[in-house]
Picture 1 (tube, rainbow, N blue to C red):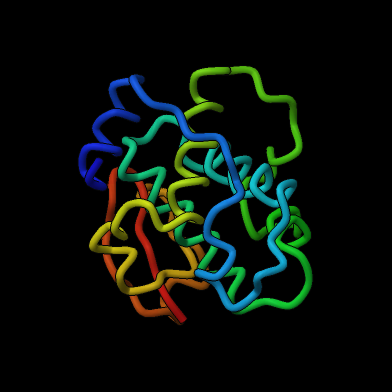
Picture 2 (spheres, rainbow, N blue to C red):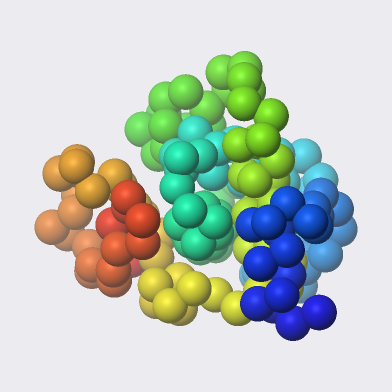
Length: 153
């Protein structure tokens, strides 16, 4: 299958990928573990569960790109206050949205699909379009996908 066919199958619900065993070599920190995939998915779920598949994939790449610039574990970064949604760690209540978040996390980590255009700029930060965070003016704006604006350092 081509990356476009994989994405279309995921969106249509025909295919579901939940194996976080691929792609450790894609990032400078090959220490990402299976439980880290849950943390990426949590960030995607709480930040973008109502977004398009493309929006969720872009958020997943941004989480990984930020991780590449931090010390410590991926889960510690995701759970650091004020980095991502304060709801991270709350119970997951929407199973379909959770499955989509896991798919986005696995696809981003594995590199099985090409990076969306905005992700090719390696954004490390994002926010909902209706927000105006204090840090936005200090970063380079790289684009908008669905309901989020993305930036890089």
